[in-house]
Image (cartoon, rainbow, N blue to C red; front, side, top):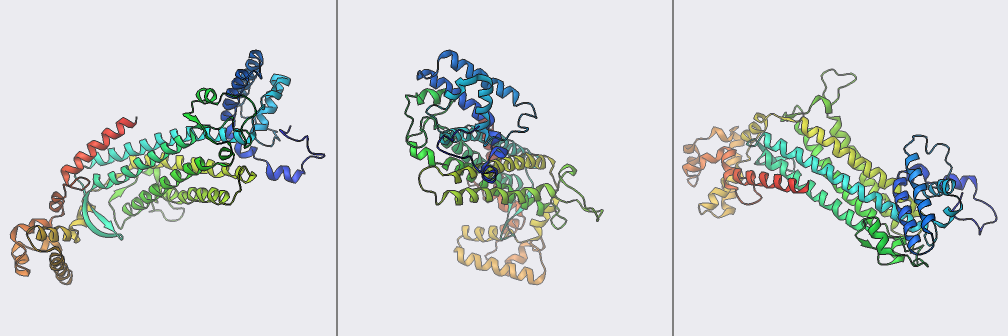
Length: 459
């Protein structure tokens, strides 16, 4: 059956039917469509269009459709244009002629918007829960190695020493922002579009506020034309998903490197790695590589819908049907990646000696030395030059920081007082970084405890 057709002398071609059909992907909106249609039936009753008995019959028929949909054969043989047409067809099979009233004053434009919003709300909640799980994993991994020292990098070159928990808390903050973004995406979707009609508003006295309360929306949309042409809420979701995948991809890249033989900082569990079909010695970080790879698909989903929407005239255009595939794919990929990263996090074993050795043998202490000279009264630009020459001398002579004695440092430059030799140990220099947000040991302990409290408040 079609929800339209009286104006046409002939039906659509078989090619157009195949080309325009969306049931193969929008079927996942079934539950949302049923729920929204039940609320609309109750609104029609309040408006005097359905009797109490008719409304009850329709609502119960929708319950039967919902129960039937649990059977894996529910969609078998269905040739309906989309999930909305399928639901109406099945409604008529159960409720009879009264089913023809369910579309009174309702456009498929607003129905699609409603279903997508209902579905997106739940996806946002689910992804926020998954993000909290990843954040919990990061805190546990940080708490397992509270004093571990690693080199921090800029340009993928050893830059300054930081604590392992400080490094993990950086990703905690990223995921916290991601969680906030999905909360905002939820709120942007959490407005009821029903009552907007195709674009000009419904011609029936529907109580929009009552429908919003019935479906748990925070309010109603303000402009019927905007509703018909709006996919901003979908773009908000896709943007949140894309930034989350960027963060996951960066973490994956870090740990692919750090678990390699060249770094050797950590080992990934057997359950998140795979071997080679040819080389028996290999233990490949496939789980992280897949996360890194899937980020491209999610970013592509955002780009896809942005390009689809960019040139559309007001209001609804059939192009907007193409929002579903990128939405569904992005939701699936970000959810799967968050589930995967939690398992990876839980599998990680850090080898603290390796990153500490990397920090000790490099010149990550150079900034500590320059800042100590500046605190002692040497203008920082001059201090920077002095330490730069000191590093050059060390590199030329093949000396690591630990190879210098206090006396040798003073011989190199009298401004290197004896107490500065202690800063050749990267753990010592971190103690000067007790500024809020820094990697000082006390600051990091406080930040870790604060992160734990914040996470508990999210539950």
